[in-house]
Structure formats: structure tokens, C-alpha cells
Amino acid sequence: MSKVLIISGHPNSDGSNANRFILNTIKQSIDDVEIRYLDKLYPDFQIDVKREQDALIASDIIVLQFPFYWYSIPALLKKWIDEVFAYDFAFGTNGDKLKGKDLILSFTVGGPEESYDPLGYNHFSIEQLIYPLQQTAYLTGLNFIQPVYTHRMVYIEGVYNKLDDVQNRAACHAQKLLNRIGVQQKSVETQVKKFIKHWFANFDKLPDNSEFFTNHLSEEVILLMPEGEFTGHSGFRDWYQAAKATFQANCEHVVEQFTVNKKGVQSYHVELRVRLIAETYKDSQFQGKQISLLVNEHWELCIKESHHIEISRYVVDVVK
Image (cartoon, rainbow, N blue to C red; front, side, top):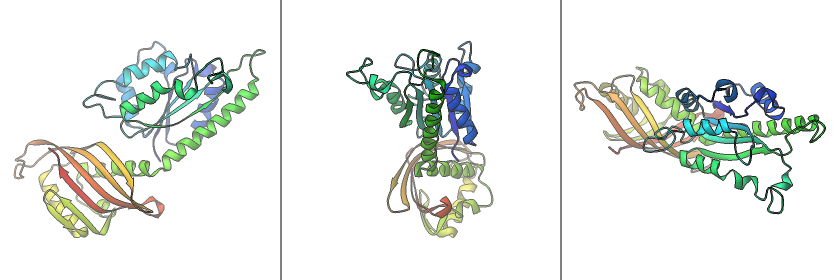
């Protein structure tokens, strides 16, 4: 399953009726989920940027859970975005750490639905008011998923709404959020992304046994590498042994970009841009130097029953 990270931006999470109910439901329903309550972690507003960035990097699906305050987000969540989505982390020359991750906005709205209309007292729709957050996703390379939001989620005793009604709406909201997360976890893009991460994590170690790789290669796989063309499992093993003789173990493959395009019923074309950072052996063509190679990769693969991924064509072009 994909790792889900929820950032709770409520300024008083324990005192919230709706947001607390939603997060408790999510916590009980998803195994691989981390909920970070900003009001508890940073009551003094002093955010540990590195810690928050590490949590983002480790996640696949990011949920911002918050009450809609003055047509925007609460102050602490805004400060969190300002500091954590830093240059060269979330945007800029090297700012690609969030690219390809899913972003879901999940928020509670106090006012009624009819008020968010040109003829209502709030004049603008919710979709219009969250454009800045949508653009933030676009700039940082996050996949902006359809938000989940619910109206009439404020309870003021004797004045506005009944507590039972608010909690019932919160239960419906939580179920919608669970469904939205579930769809993303089962999406082809998410499956492929998780496989890519696993594939390169194994390559970084350069194990002696290549069974993990051949298990995901078709018997007739074609590999077009800078060193030449290789076919089938035996061809892959020949190329892999040459790679092991060139690169030392514990190298690093950094996937900077990837896209998935459907070709057939179960077949897909995957395009990747990968940076290989590695120490080389002295008797290799790189003469023992540390290298940083940027390559474009093109995979043809199919997703079989039980979500098994099999690659039929693997092309690598060195960019620089």
C-alpha cells in the first residue's frame, strides 16, 4: 500500500468536533498512515523544516486536513507551507522532491453551500477560493487530486447546527476521504511509482543474485543500453554482470521525473529521467571516479493479475 501522510492544520485539534472525528476515522481505517498534528508539534510556531521535508519524501499521498478559515487555511498551516515547500526542495533548479506525489485537500467549511455562489454572501465558489493551493500543487509537481470538503461543519451550542448533525457530516466526509485515498492507492500510476522505487532500491545495492530483476522481465525482454542490445534473461544477466564490474554497490538512482501512458488493456509506456550517482571501479571505463549520469529511460510493461509488473522493453539513453 502507498504511504499516506496527513498534515493536520487545525489550530486546536483536540477541541475540534469535525476535524478530530475525521482524523480518528482515518487513523482507524488505514494501516500505512502518519498524521502530523501541527498544533501539537509546533505550539510555538517554530517548525522543524528538515523533519517535515523528510516526512513528505517518505510519503506517496499527502493530505492537508484543515478548517476553512477566512477563505483560506489556518496560520500555522500557511507557515508550514511557506517554510517546508522551500526553494530547491519543492521548486527551483533542484526542487523536485514532491514531483509525482498526490495531494488531497480535505477541509471543513462552516458556511452553507448556497453562500458560496455569485448571489450568495460569500460571492465566490470554493473551487475559485482554493486556486492558490491548486497552483501551489502545479508549481511543485504534485498531482492535484479532487478535494474533499463539507459545508455546515461548525457547531455553536444553541446558535448554529446540532452536534449530532455535524458529527454525521464528519462521518460522511471521512468516508469520502477514505474513498479518494483508496482510488489513488489503487491507481496504475501509484502502482508503477511504487514499483520503480523498489526496482531502483534493489539496483542501488547491486546484489549478486539478479532474480529480483529477471522476475520482472519477460522471457523475450529487449534491452537497448548504451553498451548495446541485449535479449532475454541471459542477455540481462550479461549486462548486469558488466554493470556490477563498473559500479560499486550502494550507488544511488534518483528518479527526477516519470510519466505513465496507457498503450493497451494492461500495457503501459513509462518514461523516466533518472540520475545515477555512483563510485566506479579503477579498472572500469570511469577509472574509479565518482560519476553523476543523467539518463532517460523508456519501459514497456504490463500489469498482470495480482498486480505483478513485467517489463518487455527497457531502453536507456545517456543525457549527460
